[in-house]
Amino acid sequence: MICYLGIGSSDSEVPLAAFRQGLSEAGYAEGQNVTIDYRWAEGNPERFPALAAELVMLKVHVILTTGGTLAAKAAKRATATIPIVFTAVGDPVEEGLVASLARPGGNVTGFSIALPDLIGKFLELIKEAVPGASQVALLFKPDTMPDRVRELRLKMADVSARALGVKLQVFEARGWEDFDGVFSDMSKTGARCFGRMANTSVLT
Image 1: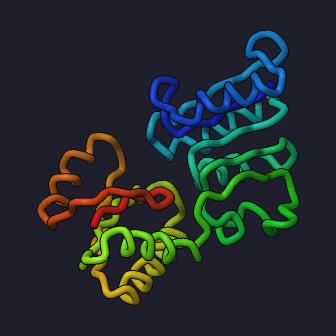
Image 2 (image 1 turned 60 degrees about the horizontal axis):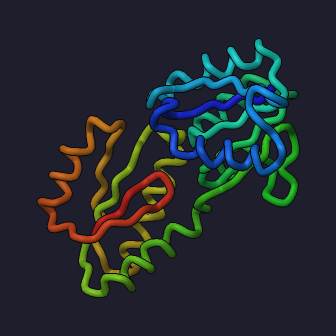
Image 3 (image 1 turned 30 degrees about the vertical axis):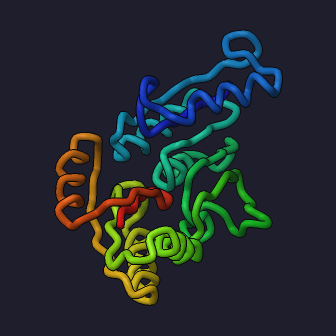
């Protein structure tokens, strides 16, 4: 039995189709030779600890988390024996998920989408794409990672932006309902170019 712990819902979860395709390519068919138990946070990361505890009670064989660092950490706190595979986290070492990239150790492993030293590179690419950019607007979902990690990321982004001679403006959105207002605020800054950086969106 596999458990899928997602940040969204069955209707909005982007990685779900790729997950099912990967299982199919490996010879697994849901409902035939593998059972998948889904748990959805529905955009609310505060639900992860309770959902993870439910999964441990079900005695699943492996837990897949797609809710960033907070989902992975909730699963790790819930069990030290059930294998956990995380997706889309920043720095799994800094965030306390694994001992090292070469030897994760424990029962947790997965994929990192943006190590901290890549933040500056993202901003460099934006500057190359839009040489005349004087400011960068960064859209952040603040509840996708622990406070300490979030503060470190923002600090590194600010240092990198200063080194490139651009001003960094940070905007926050916790859910879809915030996007209209945030994008309206971004447009008022003169933003005209869109990109992504880990759990953020970037405009210049």
